[in-house]
Image (tube, rainbow, N blue to C red; front, side, top):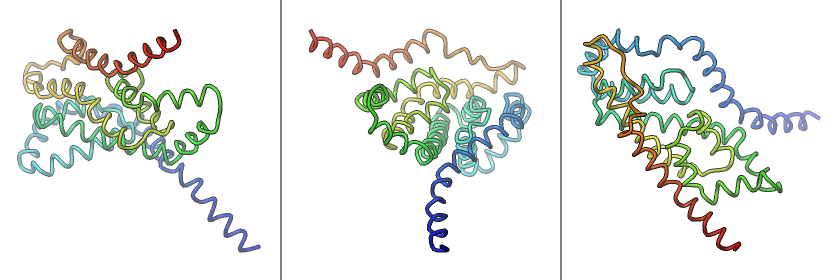
Length: 248
């Protein structure tokens, strides 16, 4: 009897343990939304800019590592302030290499969410889709047949929140390599825009103004981003056209 109880508890432990990372992310995200909403803000960056610059100049390598680590935490736990963090990367390190640090931190954070979701729900849900019939199976097959295009579109056209865009690929069984590559490259164009805005914050602070984040909707910025999205969607369009010709 004792042996059976021990075996049962041992086998049940991995079950609840799989959901622990997602549970921790959810709790920290909720706490962060309440406690850090006014801390990770543009005003905080403005008020502490001189101390941040002095610390960066005295400890450049540590500043880079600390910044990337902080960005990873913000993204991994879906804390408020990701946009401010991107601006900070540009403000502290310039457009280059600031954009590299921003994209690296965001990608690592996204990978952590992806792995937590895949461990907790993704593999089981993906297996369920494989054995199911009908619409769920078609959705999963459709994503896998056009995996790279779909993942790039998800990043280039932020039609869903960044957190959701990290979860969805895990829930349909996308591979880690494809997820990491498309995340890094897909978020780079938008990150470059916001990092460049951050690099000009010195003048903004001196004028007592706030940064114009609507810059991304300017035609000279928006049109190239839409062009990249259209290029990513091209394989989908070609496949759809060939499919219709095959049915004709």
